[in-house]
Length: 479
Picture 1 (cartoon, rainbow, N blue to C red):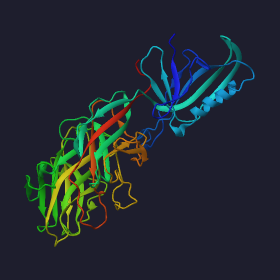
Picture 2: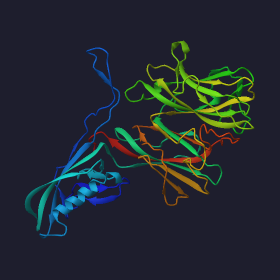
Picture 3: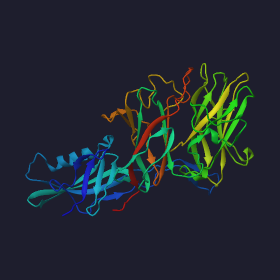
Picture 4: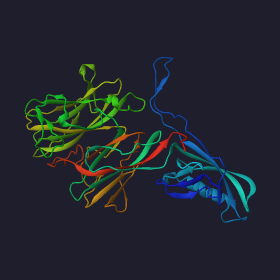
């Protein structure tokens, strides 16, 4: 007769302990209950008027609870595997929250499992009603386990992308299943071969969109307007795409370039009609650029008179370190700009450059990388690239595989060898349900490295992207 599957597994879904093995533990039929978490508290903003109430700006869910009853059996009294010891053993496994324990449950009439993330010590209650189960003596034990707010499903391997030149936007080959944001492990493989490996990485994700959303790669040659001096179609092997925009720094001390974006295509951040977008720019900078700065902002296509929003670095923007002797490509993090997603309206993304008189040479915009600030992970920026910097990949011979785990940790291996712990990105990767695009930025330099040197950014890093998702649902899921 088919029975429910109930067992403890680790964070990689590897078996740890059976809870319904029909030998020493039996799950009481239909006793398992899941109590979802109630809406939690968060930041609230009160109104000025007496009857205005307040607005809740965030939502932090408490844990849910999983409860079930087990019939625990033994042959003789006393026994080395007494009921109390067995209950303590199960409770000990369920209380190992730091080890990433989960409870897997699969109904006897279902072919899919649900996984409940253990969030704290289990509580249990012994009902000292001795009875017989076959030829064995038995006792009932009730367990209550705090679990995460969302229920996981079976993991899904998305497969590998074709070899692409990173930075790039990659379409995941399969739709993300489930009704809630899915956890995801990202794997990036790059043949390093001792050739300037990617030191820095940033990864962002969003629902798949057409048009010109503020997400992904914007090429310099797609500039929609500026007081730049012109566009170069090709001829520079260090530049990406079909060309770049340039500005002669010997003329004036100010330059601006703007690009068309359609923010209404994006999903706004939670409790907001806006989306925070992090902007990276890849520039070719002459060594004779003195006091160079860049600020990012957005404005309606009708003009700044209808509202111009600057990023978190303000109107003066980011100071940019020039190379020491020759023009070189550099990457800079221009900060986060808040862009309204409603009403349906196109906007300009504007870069404003400032420099000191006496500068010379050509400043070129190769491309921009735009990531949703709240749906992305990245390494640190503005740091010196020395031995203390947590490099995304070290300089090694062979193909380096970096795994960004869904819990913020990381792994590394060479040529499909053993995986070893390695710094992660420090944040969870949670993909929205449906078709998803992932933008991967790899760079051979740390953005805004304050060191004065003559190094330049490598054009691209060829590699592949794989994803493994853990679908999640809010409460119950179909069989």
